[in-house]
Image (cartoon, rainbow, N blue to C red):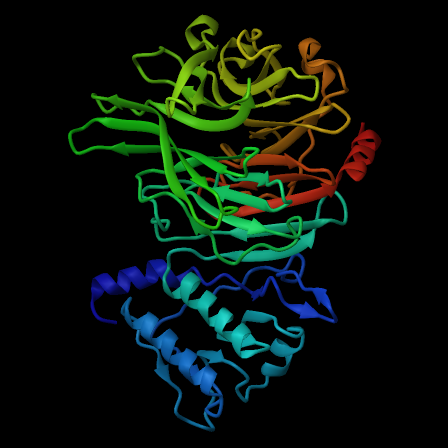
Length: 519
C-alpha cells in the first residue's frame, strides 16, 4: 500500500465490497438453453477482503490467463494495491485470486455449470475464482472483475431466486460504490424505473442515470450499466419514455449546493436513437436557484403523451412558486424546441398539502390519472397516496386518498400506478406499516376493483400486499416502480443507500388469480 490515504481508499472500495458469491454470464449456454445469471436461491452473500496479501494464480501454459492476470495487476496498481504472482508450483496460498483452470481442488466445481460459453466469479473461503468456458468468456469475467471490484465504482450482483408471488424469477441487481457513481456526483439511492421499448427490450434506470437492458423479458440483464448523465451534479429520479419514431427520452433531476451558498435545482432530458446504447443531451425542462440555499426546486419527472405532445410531470416546491409543493407539467414544442404550456395539476397552496412524486399515464378509456404522495390532514399530516384524474389533461379533479397506512402514525409515500389489461389500476408505495423498527420501509401494493377512475375511493382497492416481504430490515427507504407488459406485471424496489434493485415479475393471470384468492 502506498500511503495512509490509499489504505483508507482501498478499505472503502474493497474491504467490505466483494459481495458476489457467484456471478454468471448472462449469455452462457447449457444444453442449448440460455443460462440466467444466478446464485443459489436464498444463499447468503460471502464477504472477503482483498488487499496486498492476496496472490494471483493461473495455469502458466494458458497464455490468455497469463495476460489477464497482468491486466488485473495493472488495474490494481492504479489504486495502490500490489497483487503479486504466486511463483510456487506446490504451495497453495490461503488468500488467492485464481484466473482460469489452475490446479486447485475447487476448479472442477467452479467450471461444472458454465455450459458452452458461460463465465463466473466465485468466492470460496478466502479465494476468488475467475472462470470462463472459452477465452472470450474468461476475458468477460476478468473484465467484469476489474470493472466492478478493482475500480470500486460499482459492484453488480445479479441473482435469480423464487419469486415470492409465484414461481417466476426474482432478479436482484445491486450497485455498491464509494460515494461516486460513474458519470454523476452526489447521486443518491436506487429509485428504479422499468420501461419496455417497442421491440420488447426492457430498460432499467437508476439514480446516477445508469441504465441496464434485458432482451429476454427480464430473465437476464447486461452486466454493465450505460452511463448517461453527462457529468451533471446530483443526478437522480430517472424517467423513461419512447416516442413513435423510436427515440428514447430520459428525464432526471439535477441538484447542487453551490459555492456561493445557493441551491440549484433542475430537470433535464437526454435522448437515445439507438435503443439506449448511447445517449446525448436534449434539453432543460425547468431550472431554479434558491439564493438562500434552501433545499427546494423541481423533482421526480415522469413522461407520457398528451394531445400528441411529449409531456413531463414533475413536483415543484421552489419558494417563488408555492409555500407547499405543486404538481405541474410542461410539453415539448418541437417547432420552438422548448418546453412550454406549464400547467398546474395539483396546487399545494390550494390543497394545503405538500403534493409530490407524481406518476401518471393515459388510461385505455382516454382519461388521464396521476398518483401523488400528499402530506395534509388526511393522514395526520403524514404522507398518504392520493389520486387525481382528468378527462382532457387540462382540468384535474381534487385529489382523493386511495392508499393510507394500515397503522396510525405511519406513512405511505413514493407512489406508482399502472393499468392492467382488465382496466384495473395497480398502485404501489413505500410504507413503514407493519414495521417493528422506526423508519424502515418496504413496498406495498393495492389493486382496484374495476370501478371507473372518476368514482374511485380508498374503498375500491384491495388490502395491502407486499411483493418483497423479506426486504432488508435495516433499509430506510424502499423506492419502488412497476411495469405492465402483455405478459407480466413487474415490480422493482431499491433502498436509498444504493444497495441495489430487486425486480419481480409475475404472469398477469397468476397475479389476478393470487389477488382474487387472497381477497
